[in-house]
Length: 102
Image (cartoon, rainbow, N blue to C red; front, side, top):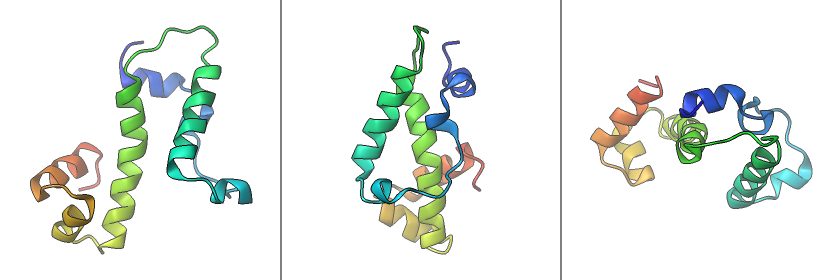
């Protein structure tokens, strides 16, 4: 149960549930506040279970939707998306492939 993939399978719903209608109070939260709340909920629901690779878990949960949104925003222009993200275009392509977005 050490890999991020296994953790995601057993993760509390706060990190893995699909996005539904967002309550008004959540709409006014910063991204930082949302991450803090999600991480706090995650650790509260571990019920004493051992956990590792939290960084990989969080990055996989955040990076893929971020890439999807940026690609939509740039109309799938990889050069522009790389500029928006502050990444090299090759790095962007690697990440898009990693998440099955290319």
